[in-house]
Image (tube, helix red, strand yellow):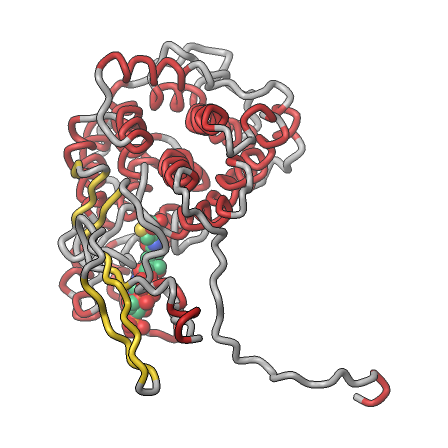
Length: 430
Ligand code: CMC
């Protein structure tokens, strides 16, 4: 971060020199930290469209070129040649592990997969028809009531244990939320299975008969986890960072991230996309649907399309589409009607001026629901799967933030447009 260049801001004829920070990749950042003290002005940027809220060494996105890297490695290579737990290690520690480091990491994660037995009662307090995301927000927040020995954020060892616990237990919690919603008994984790295969086992096994995990589906599940592992300062990650900046415990911070992810503009888009594809039903209905999307008064959006950062193809969407083809082929589904609608919708949208002018392309959520549905997941489970996969990203960013000696509580300012000072009026005089 070289600071030898400055930008000059002139306010009412007075000049202020603002340092320019140079990143390894991406646009320069104008450092405005001292601006308020010097010039008595705030900067105004609702939605943070031009604001870098932190520095980070974890993930980089070039939205114009459609590039996503973790610790410098392109997502395509990680999805193709690595696997989820190795990517977790990379995100958490900054480098790819040696064989011994990976084995130790995988063993430690595997040994933390069970949840405190008393938490089962906590699940049972929810209505059976609760959305699994509602259950996850509650249960992950409640981890702070069960794991008192990993709440001290100032103790690096406790931070480490909290990270392991969250990464290891999130699939168990998501699978239990699912089992509870369909009235089936909870299935305990199996530590002889890998991370993705164990998740499929906990979701689809029943005590009454054996369940063999299909290795191709387990690989596809692992790839979906990898594609969702981190995405720099998105809304849920920024929520985790903001929550953590006050010193809140890790479980509370991740629960906050899950709550933010749930919205349809963010992680909830995978569920919303599949519901949209179902609603469209057949390719003949696409032109009417597109007309509605373009009619601003309709408030209808093409879900799974568009992104704040990508103004090109989301590289995750390309891998996801390829994975959808592989899974449907394996399952012998050659004429999936939803896939046909999705492909035609993508074809039409990419040729339409509305989408071209606004640089709207398919994002990670456009094809993920088709794969997850083909694997047997109900739509309500799509966002919990996103949440469990993103947990490592949240935790890595949380760890990075807490290690920063300059950490300050996040406290944005505002452009106040309300009433100026006025006197209270007694009720009888109003
Ligand atoms: N369908 C129709 N129009 C859209 C869409 C869409 N999906 N996305 C953006 N636009 C239009 C928007 O109406 C606006 O048009 P105009 O300039 O005429 O007012 C323009 O494109 C810019 O949109 P914006 O809302 O200012 O862009 P944003 O960066 O604030 O929003 C977004 C990004 C992801 C919230 C948005 O593209 C969207 O709502 N997409 C659908 C939901 C979705 O798929 N979300 C998943 C994102 S990827 C996974 C994740 O991050 O969780």
